Length: 141
Image 1 (cartoon, rainbow, N blue to C red):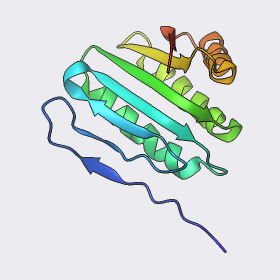
Image 2 (cartoon, rainbow, N blue to C red; image 1 turned 135 degrees about the vertical axis):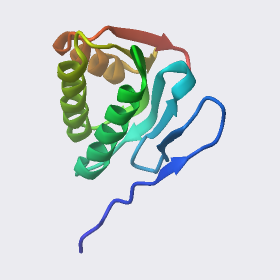
Image 3 (cartoon, helix red, strand yellow; image 1 turned 30 degrees about the vertical axis):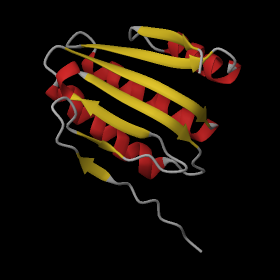
C-alpha cells in the first residue's frame, strides 16, 4: 500500500505572518514572519521518506528569502529530527548558503532544550559544516 504525504500550505492574514506549512504528527510547522524577515520551523520531523515535505519546504524557504530584501533568519525549534530528515535539511541549508552567500545575510538560530543532547549535537554538526552565521540557542523547556 502506498502512502502519500499531504502538505498543507496555508495563508494567514496577520500583520506579521504571511504563509507557512501546517504541523502534522510527523512534520514541523513553518511560519513565515515577513515583517521580521524571519522563518520559524518548529515541531518534529519523523518521516521515513521526507522528500515530498522537504522539497516543498525548500520552495517555501527560497521564495521567502527572495522576498526579504537584505537579510533573513531561520529559527529551528525542533524536538526531534530523524536521520533522513537531517540529511534533507542539510541539503537545503547548503543550497541556501550557495545561493545567497555574499548577497543576503541568512542567519540560522538552532534552539535546543538544555537536556536534549541529540538536538544540540545535530546543531553542532550543521554549524561545523556550514559557513552561514549559526547560533546555538539553549532553552529550558
